Length: 520
Ligand code: BG6
Image (cartoon, rainbow, N blue to C red; front, side, top):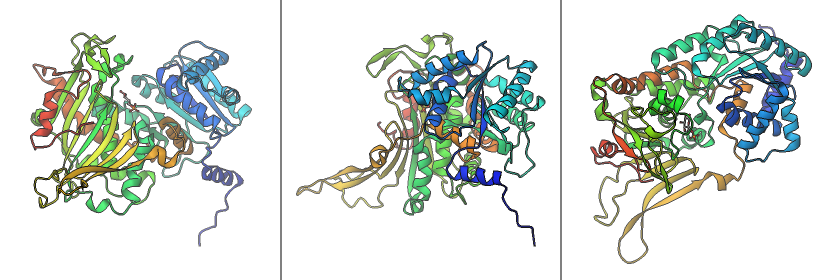
């Protein structure tokens, strides 16, 4: 008989914290602490977690960046950022509590002395604040620096690598990696190798903020906590699926990054693949990291690779020209600050994908995303096959059933079906039955970054992407990139006017099978 293991008081304390979803004591170190992401998302999220009592007392936040600054100056800068992100609604007592947690280490990311300084700071915080050696590193710098930072963390004794198969034990080290994870398959593999030379996969949290959105998680709940949808969620009943991520914003002040990314790297490889996999995956054995992520990977592996020659038949890439969005005249992409006047960077994509497995054989998935479109909306729409007999003839009954999971800005699930218009005539019309998230629950939602930071602090990687998932997604989109970037002579850049739903070619892509994009 095996020995009965009696939990140590420390283990018991950790388990009790987990039940209440309060993380262990720890230091959160943000690399790139003066950058845009830190200001707009990370600090406001950490402040909110602190305000809501979701961070332990013994949690310190250390900013690491190049700019010289004292702890006090860093606190002032973070205060401004948090005020900006919360429209000034900062609670004074909550702020004081959060400000006390903030510390700053100034160093070049490539300078070994900076990492020694970081280690000394963290050891001091272990003593003074009780952070007990647990570390969460957040890589929020330019992606070219990720590999280097991780190597240096390893070399300077700033990481603990758990035994294979263990849950991380104590003290633990984890790393959150912001997208983009590479810029193609080879560079993603390189980065993953660099990460895995220092950390185990269980310590790596690759973030895709779409997975932190309530309504994205609700796709799983909708499908697998209800019995009535799964039987019809397949090629027998579904005609096609449309996934739309439409934005009204242009490139904003991010041209430096966007010029090297474009819509395929920025949105398709990451957020759209997440929506696709959650929508199409099989039921996981359990809602736990490995089961959920393994099912998502299977979808990506089953997605048909588009041969280079076939890309033009299946994909439309385009760039916005000048136009009018929400009543405002806006400039074209090439006139945006820091964009090359001859830039070929695509800001719009429409594409058709097939998933070659038993569930989805023959069902087209149409994906579209763009900047400077007429409306901000993210949704997954499942269009069902029509009724087998046109019993009601030409009475308006030809609209198919449609199930729409609207992710943002309105968080709604709706089902369209045909009903009889009251009166003597047999006139039919499509009507909609809807569930509205906000009014149904009336509770304040956590933002995506709050949710994901908390999960990483708790060590739950269900909503983070695994190595194979990221690499499969790159493998899938790579033909698009190769077709666009390596074609000789270069593909001409089709333009669409800002404020329209993309070029005519996008409409033609879906119309070839008699279908059309949803009017949003
Ligand atoms: C980011 C992209 O990951 O997601 C941006 O880099 C995009 O280009 C943004 O605008 C969209 O996120 P959300 O949460 O506003 O839909």
